[in-house]
Amino acid sequence: MATSIDSFNDLKELGIDCEDDSLTETFNQAANHLQNLLPNLDNQTLLTLYGYYKQGSHGPCTTPKPSWYDMKAKSKWEAWSKLGDMPQNEAKTIYIETIKKLDPNFATASPTKESWVSVSTLQDDPSTRHTGEKTLVDYVKEEDREQVTNILGSPDGKKIINEVDEDGLGLIHWAADRGSVDILKVLIEGGADVDLQDCEGQTALHYASSCGHLDSVRVLLESGARRDVLDNDGSSPEAVACDGAVKELLANFT
Image 1 (cartoon, helix red, strand yellow):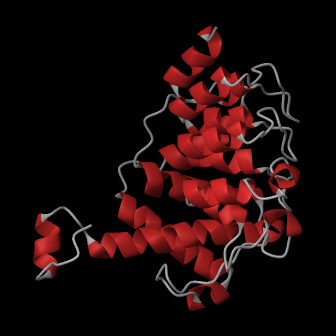
Image 2 (image 1 turned 60 degrees about the horizontal axis):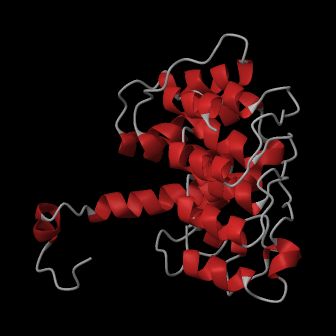
C-alpha cells in the first residue's frame, strides 16, 4: 500500500477504502472471538452467524442447493442463501453487532491490528505455543506463512502440528476452513495428517469441500487425502460439498 497519500479521496481513487479495511479487520476479530462463545450458543444462532459470515466474506450465495437428505449442508446453505443480495459490508456489520450482543465485552476490543489482544480460547493451551500475544492458530488464520513456518520449524513443531485444540480442530482444519492454500502446503510439508479428524469426525477435506474452496480441495487430494472418510453424521466430503466444481473434482479425481 502507498505510504504517502495526500487525502482520503486519493485512497478512494486508488480503489482503497480505509473504512472497509477497518470493518473487515473488526469482522475477522469477531469471527475469531466466536470460538469463545461456542459452548453457550444454540444451533440456530450458529446458523445465523454462519450465514452472515459467508455473506460478509464471499458475497451472495451462488452455490447449488444441497441434496434434501444432507440436512447439515442444507441448513447452512439456507442460512446463507436467504440473505439474497445483501451487501457484504452490511453482513459484516450485522455479524459484528450480533457478536457484541452475545458478548458485550467484545465491544471493548480495539479495532486496530497493532493493539488488539488475542481473544482466542486457545491462548492458554500449550499446544498453540505463544509468540507474543498471538498463537500458532492465530497465524494460521491470518495466513502468515512466515510465522507458521518458523514455529513449525522449532523443536516442538513436530509435536504440535497434529494436536487438536479445545474446539476439537487441528491446524489443518483451520487452514482448510479459510481456504488458505499456502498454509495448507506448509502444514502438509511439515508433517500434518491430511486425514486428521475433528471432534465431529470431519477432515480438512470435509471443511474445504463444504466451504467451496476448490484449490484447497485439490491440494488435499494431491496430498493423498481420503475421500471415503465419513464424519459422525455419516457424510463424506463429497456429501457436504455445495459447489458443483468441488463435487466434480471429488468424484473424478485420480
